[in-house]
Image (cartoon, rainbow over all chains, first blue to last red; front, side, top):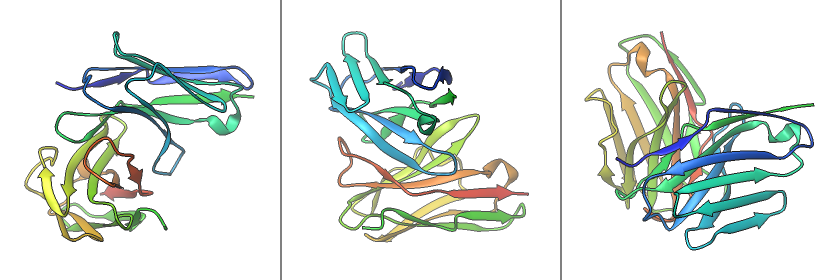
Length: 110
Length: 114
């Protein structure tokens, strides 16, 4: 079935780059998304990439998409303590619903 | 716009009681989704509506769960009777359409069933 896989934890030092990886199974999704969830809050759309693109840059965020390997990554440059959160990768499934990974908890140490 | 509004923010109830969670989607959005989040299972889609019509309810755990969307600006998720294993954070989300659109989430309802 359709699935989105992510590693569960990532720990980095403040100022370093963070790279969060995701693999997905359904290649029909027009867009792929990264959502951010801060403690006690709902998910917020962080960024997204059109499936025909390889890369998208938005300030400190870089999204890389490898369609052949069905691999999506989110790079956060100069990671700050405020970036500590859970990051979810998501794609639209064939049934018309957004499928999320289990989320990667990013911890930023000062 | 105020975003997706959910109520209550927190609900504590005893096993066997009826629980009703409420959601007001963003005005103009045609699709509404109910998700449940737990540590063990992550985010699970329970049900989603398009133009107030339930499209896929295959994620609803069992008959104790029901969801309605009587109009474009309101939806409820009901659990009757509630059980301790229903304890989770329940999120409502809305989008302009059913696919390839951005999903906007509410702040969630933290449900604890004792």
